[in-house]
Amino acid sequence: MEYKQELLLIEVERELCTNSFYEFLLSFWDTAVQEPLIDNWHIKYICDELQYLAGFIKRREHKPYDIIFNVPPGSTKTTVVLQMFPAWLWISTPFARVISSSHGHDLSEMSANKSKDIILSQRYQTLFPHVQLRKDSTAKSRYTNTKGGNRHTTSTNGHATGDHAHIKLMDDLQDISKAGSEADRNAAINHMKMLFTREVEKGNSINVLIMQRLHELDCTAYLLGLSTKRKVRHICLPAEISDLVNPPELKERYIDGLLDPKRMNLEVLEEKKIELGTYGYTSQFQQEPTPPEGGIIKRKWFGIIPKELFVAETSPYMFFVDTAYEKKKIKKAKGEPINDPTGLMACKIQKGIVIITDYREVYLELPDLCRFIQSWAVAQGYSQQSLLQIEPKASGKSTIQTLREFTTLSVMEIEDVGKKDSKETELTNASPTIQAGRFSLVQAEWNRLFLDRVCGFPFAAHDEAVDLLCYAKKYYFGSSNPAAAQEAYEKAMKLFQ
Figure (tube, helix red, strand yellow):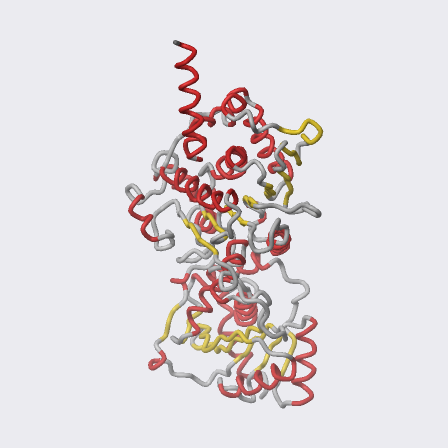
């Protein structure tokens, strides 16, 4: 009798685990993780989404979409996606071929080994004896079962040459500690693009990206930018309820405004805000790479002058330009192009306040760019006392030479560009002057773009506005002393007298 009851219990558990990835996770949690499971609704939600997609692999049907999960760190995402899911997938779909990847090879291998430990466990083998690993293919980064399924593990700096998969699992492809690194960000995106091509059947290989947001042009942004060409489902779960919760109906599952009040209560989140700072917390926990209030520079530090109240005094307009003469390339999420624009800023100083009267970003090749700069400067109030100051990088030098040859504009190179500190240091050094109210904007449509760029740095898509603001600060106020404003004003007035 006891033997029959035991067989019945095994059969019940087998049925539950086979039909529900979430039930499998509950049953095998202690096989992969030493700490007890602190369950929350989002875990089952992710499990159910993955199970739905797995059905298309099992039935060999065309995938409905790729999927993105944006969730905070500490949300059990790696355990669910990279460790538990492949072991469960093989129960009903043993032929499935899986490629999994993370930013670090050690992390990728650890997750693959956790999956292997589950598969080789006595409990798993009792419930699912049909899933057996081939003895001649059990390496840490690659193993195969006897039904044709395999698991290949790689990392952002690795490769998957020769391997194809029914499903690619991508977990935090960029190292969080290098969130501001353009090189690391591009490496992660290029690695993801390479994984896209590793398909068992073209157009029918599912891509799963799970990560916390790090930048406006990170892997999430890239994949969302492809949504016009392929279907992408975006699940976004900030730690604290916000308009970014997606699908919006998931807001109803938040408790007291929190995603996971057990593990990420208000006290824990306050500690994370202190540990990570504004940028780190807003991007990683709130899935918003650009903090609404700003980071190094706050939006409220800039005065806004209604256009109808702005009266230009006799001080000359000054113009600052950061050049790049290329046409727009591939567009990303939010319509952001991948390449840098030319940034242009017009301003003048009045009563010790630098008033920015215009900011533009344009994508033009050299001849058209020079024509645009000339007409734009004239339209913005260029006079004989004005200076057009251009960053003397490669494209800047060509622009300077062309403008000097074919126009009457007073053009000069911005000084000490080669000696400048990092952008973070430059902007930090400029922040006291900006905070003191020394910069104002004439109210116009471009204000939002300018503030998004400056206050979103270093996670905003482009940083031309940051460079131009720092150049203007140095020109008008020197390296550190805001009291030099009057001296700079007089210098500008006498420059061409």
